[in-house]
Amino acid sequence: MIDFIQDLKTRNETLFYFGAVCFVLSILFLILAKTTTTQVYGVNAWYKPFKFAFSTLTFAWAMAWYCYYLPDFNIKLFNWSIIILLGFEIVYIAIQASRGQLSHYNLISSFYSAMFSLMALAASLATIYTAYVGLLFFKNSFLELPDYYVWAIRLSILIFVIFSFEGFAMGSRMNHNVGALNENSNWFILGWSKTVGDLRVSHFIGMHALQVLPILSFYVLKNTKLTIGLSIIYGLLALLTLIQALQGRPLFKYKDEVNSTK
Image 1 (spheres, rainbow, N blue to C red):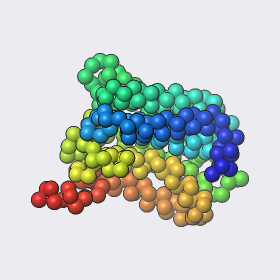
Image 2: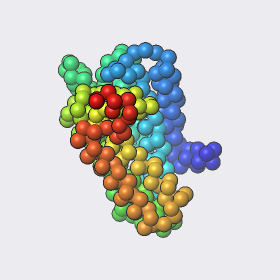
Image 3: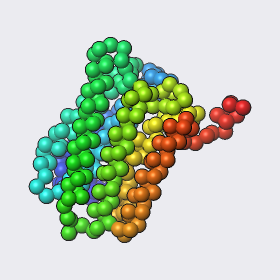
């Protein structure tokens, strides 16, 4: 792990430190979630900024690692675009959590509506830029890298982009659930619903393909066909959880929830 961190810092010092800041913030937000009582939609308000900060950490470090391989890539522009766009989201979400107010789906005033739109724009621009990086991985050859690893990066970015934009399914509904209004069952830290469909499940699974597939390909599979096969299965898993959520069904049905509906 120490070797990875040192190598990551060498590859992209800017995104390394941005990720480190996100890590510190995620710890702070988690502590606040455990020590304060402010709630939004039935769960502690600080869980949301924690999830966004930690997710941004994993994204920033993954992209810092992958973009190092790209020839003639304007890494400074990419770095600062990601820092500004995603940093803005984390800061605003944290401010709203401190006030016990919604960040997403908040249309109670023109200001909050504008901020919600700006967050959507920030996420979209970051995703589009990531899609461009993915396109460069498809266009270029990387003779110094194993083919299976390159394909893992390509397909992980593709899945990430698709299910990042799946967030618009929540934004358009002003609701991350199907069958209830923004219900949270406090399922671990993720907060996914135990009783109705939850669109956040496929969003989470798809976006974290960015880390899961390259790691498994490089350290475990070490084979191009197996990597492509796993990527297809992983993408189908994300798709099936999306279909399941759209049908109003939770990821898992717990016994207590089953008994309560009888």
